[in-house]
Image: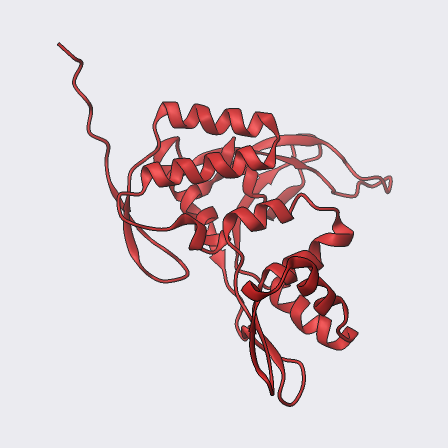
Length: 240
């Protein structure tokens, strides 16, 4: 006689980018082990694939993970983590308080962060239609989770341009619209790097102001007693 299956709770989750409400279940111990193994591997492709696999397992409604903006997936994963493992996550802080002798304290210590209180920060006044001239411009979009996480592995000197390239939906001018689907990555990169500094900074501002996830930590340094009130934004902290 087989063992009975224990029903898992189901929660409503609102997708930030669309406002659509979906049903999700917590991830299981088996799925948690898969996530921990992926993090320990430190291989970006494994982490990306495992997060997507677990989210697909946990979502009870039809969604296409590859079509959701990266911040939807980040926010959903954190929600699942809180419902599955618990609200508290150990986060490492380093005290930068300047002591009387002029030196920084430098003491590292762990604090508990409450992931149930993380926020998705949006910036006002950010348009996805960026004008580059009287009749020309670029329509931007948010990269999906897989693309964004792979780009974060790039050297800093290359990262910003590649994020901009991956955020282009189409370029338009008097001749019409030119979809990113019709051009190679190298062709789009050449287009971006051929812009004036002024126009490049317009595209740069768009990606600099992507929606982001932020949590708040308050704690006293055990060594010098300085009270820290900081924001944490490191996504991979939530795997711990």
